[in-house]
Amino acid sequence: MDNFFKVLWKKLSKENKLSKHTSVNVLVAPLGWGLGHATRCIPLVDKLLQHGATVILATDGRAYALLQQHYPTLTLLKLPAYNIRYRSTNMTLAMASQLPKIVYAMVAEHIALKKIIRQHDIKIVISDNRYGLFHRKVRNIFMTHQLNVIIPNPLLQAIVRKGLNRWIRIFFDSCWIPDVANEPSLSGILSHPAPLPSVSYVGSLSRMQRYEVKKEYDVIAVLSGPEPQRTFLEAEIIAQAKELTNSFLIVGGKPESDERKQLSHNIKYVSFLNTTSLNRAMLAADVVISRSGYSTIMDLAKLRKKAILIPTPGQTEQEYLAQHFTDKKIFFNQSQDKLDLAHALDKLDDYTGFVNHSFENDLLDELIANLLKK
Image (cartoon, rainbow, N blue to C red; front, side, top):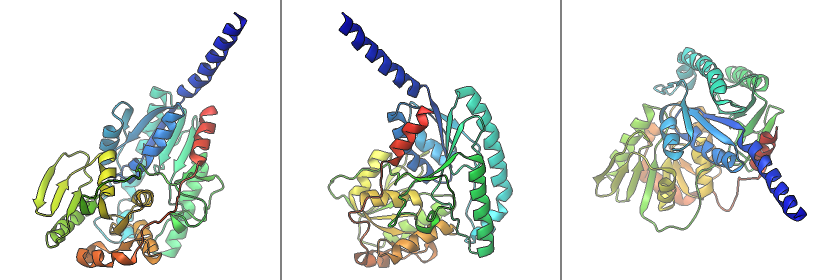
């Protein structure tokens, strides 16, 4: 009988410990520009759920639609949208002209967070590049891959970098970078060296998995990013693909839509694919055409695919990453205004993709476990 009560007591004690973890409500809030911030939060959310946390999601735009499809049972809240549009190829001019809009969105999301914390008893906030999402009564984690912002004007670059890093240091408890600490890395000078003392390199965060599938396409074009540049690139790829003999699958990157059609004898089009379907489709193609957003780079590294990168015009971060990996003979890149798919496909034999190198580590598990204990 004594042994029975001892076993029962151990079981109840273990359940009580687990209940402490399940009682921790964590808000995960990715930026809504394009889909990349939301997609890289998927492995983060999965880790939190594995550790017993209750996850509440918050974002806007197409990121909202993507997370709604991926996590239909989780609470998903809408945050104020930044509504950034890239019409100009001059990043400084494009961002400066929309600065009032950005500041307003930051203030609005900060106000919205107060209500969310109160209504959902939030204990931890993980903000992916949302600078307004912090609160003195909770643990604040900021996730980014871009501590060293690239701006064509060196003086302005230094001012912006120092200001943003000071902001993170003052209002957030720690900063998580989805990359490895040492070279070779995925983000290069964007987050190496880290100018903040509270930085943790949590390893690459890709929602993709690598496995064997049968080839179905020569090329898959995975579109994403802010409008109107996403639409401009889609139209140009379709026009050039029609002149080629390669088989194409074009994924529009529009989770709010459900459109599937055969554009020509060699081009299939789908407006959106969920994670499982996109994972398989990318593996089933020889070559990936995509933006050079950081989340896409992490996916390509995980899948070890060859790729043609086309930076969003005016996004210096994407331009840097595309050129960085071209210089290393990993990916080929072309600018959107000089896109030549036939030439790019011919050049791919000179580029390796990522070969036999992992950018993952176990630090994220450790950080989450410690975070939920506090």
